[in-house]
Length: 625
Image (cartoon, rainbow, N blue to C red; front, side):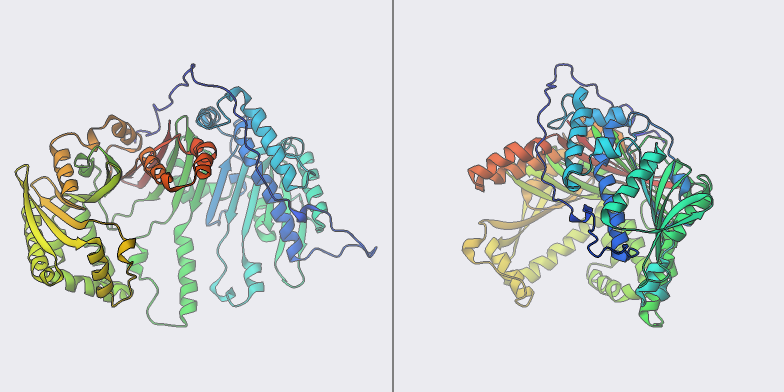
């Protein structure tokens, strides 16, 4: 597959403003837990309990976390990932943040941040972030710690977590057993073992936590336990001088057993997930869905108390992929997110990639589009699947009964090809509706005619009228539901008075209309005749698909796909800013000064699902300008 991210590294305009804007001061609350616990009795501190070593772990995690932003641009090297090699093979969830910025990520992160206030001068970027993180860490530790002095010298830029097999269902009724069976670790890459060990020890001393020394597999560990939670022990240690590991004792020992090379990284599913993309990234998360679901089913069975009906049938479980992975990378002008799963051939959904036809009928002013290929068949396949699911049988029967008045589900849905929701700007307001490229236009027309007959007969008593309008050799049917106040009253009546009805002076004025039209090329059902006309015009003239900006975005995620989504972030922001006319002068000034500069760079979001023979991928890109 062609890498959708290639070819999109725009150069920085040498004439652009490179003034380093000041970074706003951030208010961070202090952490009392960082202070040492005074010993007023003169006795030796007792062994730390559950709360104390939990605080210690929290402090370590918090201080490392706030150092992440600085490391994103402060670390120049790109060493090979080391933490994943120490993750136990039976882990069901793994996540990593590559703050060492491997490969091209440092260059791209710098270019990306340059679009935001305070980062225009990339030459001053390291200094700015170093100072900012010193301030944050200092305030968080009551000025006892700084990033540049205490963390940066030993931290090598990789942070990861792993979750082991979920506890057995039988532990749910016993908190102590649940705690003892929980498997989880945090891993941090280090470049100076002595400095790292000294820092961890000092943080634990400041919290008043204490532990016992233990050696396992040649690694020195500090172990914490709580008499009230027998069997639940936590530990931390430094493995091979490369990785600091903290978590439950069993998981820490399992990490030691990997020797940095024989853990999760060797599992076939995990290997397939990591091989799905060769691009450098700053974030990655992996889920062993099959193991998680199997244990979740055990929990559900246990909670059901022996009920004969399972919470989810085997047919449904078979539709869920065995694993899922997410990846995040930064490009000079975008955030790129990829989700990958193994293909499930029997699952409902389109199987063939092609350019979705809805964009060709979306008006050029479209700000939101969400469309899928082969929607009619996908819906029919989904109904067939859920029909065999005991917990959904009643719902499916109700749907089929309602569709029976229109000739059944087959007649109601099978005509739909590429179909989606479109929302477009219409001056200062919005319009939108459902747009479908029909596989059988005659069948679609027949369905709409049946619906028109039902509305005409049933709506007359409610004051609902139907009229037709000729436009571009097409007949547009308009269903006038009455005024907004009438519709609100009708909603209240249909809900038996459950729906709140606003007083007349609290409702907008105007008529509520639904319009539709069907041609050989498109079926549109929308918010009024104007939207229908704009869709018809787009089909024969300029459309969103013809827009050069949209075409460029689409090329980054896959011009041939099974599903497509688009949001014009810049247009959405502009429309939202129109609401500021109701804000006070101070509120508008605050927005212009403190909020808008950080929102203005965001331009658009584009996403596409691409099916492969073995793997399916969802590519999403958020662009800035």
